[in-house]
Amino acid sequence: MTRRNHDIAELKRLDVAHHLPAQSSYKLQRDIGGSRIIVHAEGSTIFDGDGNAILDGMAGLWCVDVGYGRAELAEVAREQMLELPFYNTFFRTATPPPIELAAKLAGLLGGDLQHIFFNSSGSESNDTVFRLVRTYWGIKGEPERKVFISRRNAYHGSTVAGASLGGMSYMHVQGDLPIPGVEHVMQPYVFGDGFDEDPADFCARAVQDIEDRILAVGPEKVAAFIGEPVQGAGGVIIPPDGYWKGVEAVCRKYGILLVSDEVICGFGRLGEWFGFQHFGITPDIVSMAKGLSSGYMPISATAVSSDIVETLRSVDDDFVHGYTYSGHPVAAAVALRNIEIIEREKLVDRVRDDIGPYFAKALAKLSDHPLVGEARSLGFIGAIEIVARKGTNRRFGGKEGLAGPIVRDACIGRGLMVRAVRDSLVMCPPYVMTHEEIDRMVSIIAAALDETSETLRALDMP
Ligand code: PMP
Image 1 (cartoon, rainbow, N blue to C red):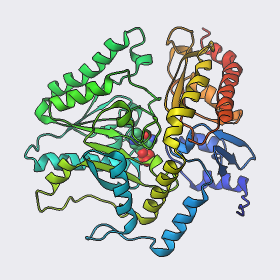
Image 2 (cartoon, rainbow, N blue to C red):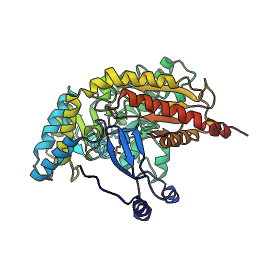
Image 3 (tube, rainbow, N blue to C red):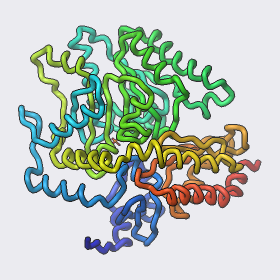
């Protein structure tokens, strides 16, 4: 493959002059003289325009599960583009790839989740959930069931409905969100919110908070509960044992739909095809994106139960929702081949039986570090908590979010891409990462913690 030569200085100049990157401070973008330009990637390593090779501990943005440089995904896209680059699914038309992909997903999801609606992003998938659920209850003759229950610190996207369903208060500030009809309850964050509590008691409290809110709103007004099996962008929050079974039981008790947002957890991240399968629950709706195509094309999917589809089929009306790119043939063809790669290379088994346990063991070594309050993982997603005093969950400077970015920047400087969520350092690497690369990831984090410890301690100085 011939690689293009880029004028990096010029790109950085143009970046500041014309390009507004996602979820960014445009002041910082300008002050640092433009974004870091990533020009190439292979396996689990990304390369920037300044000549740095960086181990990608984040699989792009929780998505490049099969790793970079998969020529067959490019080939399948090329073939589909030449055969049929686009046709819509609006007017009783469809194309082969989304139909084949829907059938494939139905097989992987199993049970009643046999119908798939396509979108281009995780946010759009959750917008679909929002409109579909309310339409469903309307047809069922319970139009007052409009309220969604979600968790604080959940991430469900950046569109108006996605950010409203999400529980990020800093996102709600911009644009007067959430929109009416979304209620946020406590998150199952043991380290942050249940530190001194017995995990079983904490779990019961988190489930009870959902039931209390349902009763406060009025069960006849609650449409659905939405949650990520493991909260990703919120800081890799792994719920305590029994949480999801408890949530499911509460939803069933009040006839509320259960929505599993699998945008990060789907496609093997937790060691099963889907996170709900790991936790042994049966959702009515599943949102998927990211790992569906390993980020090679923008595509997302909303799986719904047969009961929901039967209800929609009980009326003549159109479901007046959908996008130009719903079921985009090229994106769907790439997603199908991506799933084929995951199956052929047994990557879900690899997460569950090999790299998942290896990662957990490697992370456990970090637990001994004086600045680490907890190292946790499930499958191939994990986090460490940076604390000011070992044995506590006290943060540096007495404030959340000061230490995390400092350690993150030190990691990037040492050749590891990780993200800081407040004072957690989060990891979600490609499934093809080798044992040696996992060891390197962990030793870079240890070195970054050592390197920054004086700076962090200074945050605590009066
Ligand atoms: N849901 C979850 C659980 C996510 O992690 C994300 C993205 N991080 C989204 C939804 C939104 O996906 P997108 O950025 O593709 O709109």
